[in-house]
Image (tube, rainbow, N blue to C red; front, side, top):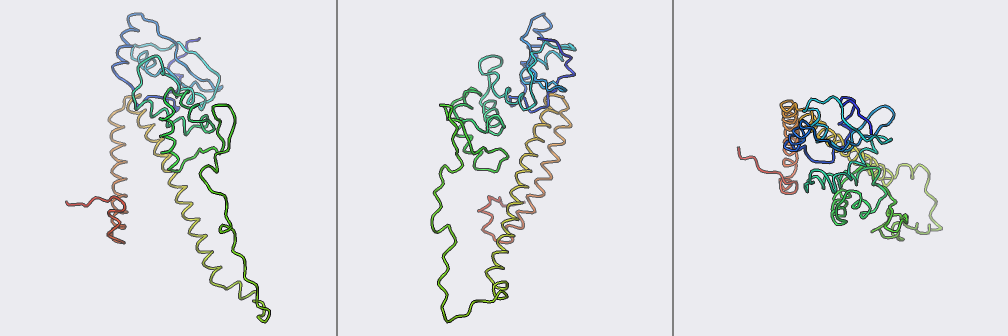
Length: 289
């Protein structure tokens, strides 16, 4: 255990396992520290350059508010990702009791983290400190949307590694293969190369390929937007909850919401103009103003 300057510890590494910081708990800890109470050291991970806080957000906030410049730390050698994975399993049996929102946040983060990409539901449940069923429920939700991390291999409870890529998929059938070509009539001359090059089916296949490529690009951009939005929400949360710049955080969120609303309204207008039934299909609410 060593003491580190609070200013040298990074709190913005995606290692906050709780949904929010409890201000009352911070205040209670601050008063206890002022009275001379000793608290367990916070856990940080050191990657050779940066100290990432993995456990102890309430304690480090209280120490800062109590006017302390440094804090006792248990230093682990590891990367920012190691600190993140560690953070998903803290507060299972000590410290401030976790809310359901805290548990949900930890499970979702663990499922999308490199450390959990190859683990079974049961193994993740043990690490986070929740039920297997809770992990299964959120895995289904995440599997239904595009994501960055999805391992085709997973470890079971017995330690064996299984390939889950083909679970739920049927083997390829004869219909999936290219259809056999009918025998050519002996009296019919073979088609010339120019006929094959200009045949409509080839052009239609090219159009389908182009459309597929565009759809794939939209899917990738959608995934990028989801990840960027998650990161932005994390940063704005830090700005308000940790840095205390509530007005700036609120202004940023307000501007973002206004921009999203403007884009959504334009797309909704186009969708309804193309087909009025899109209003019900896309859940578009009628503007009665």
